[in-house]
Length: 100
Length: 301
Image (cartoon, rainbow over all chains, first blue to last red; front, top):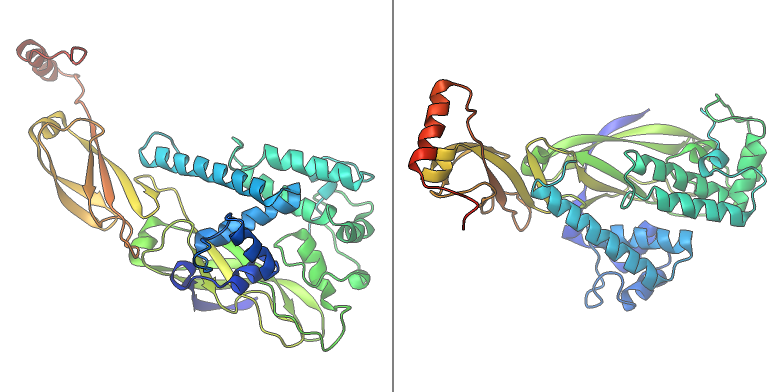
């Protein structure tokens, strides 16, 4: 048993990750990140800094690409559709139209 | 530890080809994907399927798993023989699962001494209450991590961290805890821990980004005539003015009373007009008087 410690983190949204940090968090080469930013499926090409949503998105893209041998554009489309479903569900829930 | 049958998880037999395994995995992961599945335990099921595929979908890991698991059945108590894993090199196996438990013992890397590599980052989720996001809080998270004993061997251990949750955090945001990831190799530093924040369902409030929604039951006369009502909110009870002529579903916005994020969210109060029951002579008389005295037909525009 490791002793319990109190730790303070930083919100990624406040510091924003660099290309290398995002790559390391996803266990990919920085080139993977750059390629996806250039393809317009990850982050904003104007600023190569990444926030919470980008990290989650990168990990989901990677999973789809690996497990389904999906092309990056197709993986991005699947995730956009899934995000839209999540957004609509959150909307329904917020308005009290659906339980859970 | 308990033996996990990855073949059973994916519904394939032990002789399945790599292609069969991939097909079975894809079929299952589509079926149980949390975004599309109606199954209650879709999340847990997806995690199991992914864990199984991480191993069976990789020829080397599959070979190691097969070498170990011959003759074992799911759920059996199971203890790997000492040093069995020396021939395999999975020092990087970091996932929180049965396989990682097994291969934590393979810390004696074949890469030899002098090899340096920063530890992997760990990703985990943490569920907090809405109140924590309003006030900030300290919450504990427990991770299973391989811990090196210094002699080149490792065991899986529970590591408990008390994490300061910053005020103003919203669902899906990630906290990075520097140096709380996996240990490095050969003297290199540890990785980081990323914690994705989720919110526990709340009986009263719903959260959408930094905005918070709550239903407020009101009487017909409060809705019709307007008035002041006391409403419980995540930041304490507030007196709210119900505008005269309100109907059910009307949304009142309390600006900045949502989650106190960098851009603070709003609190939306959704009015629910609740009719008093007509369960006494007096109540029935009041309804009858309304029916008689108010020329009101909601079906006529």
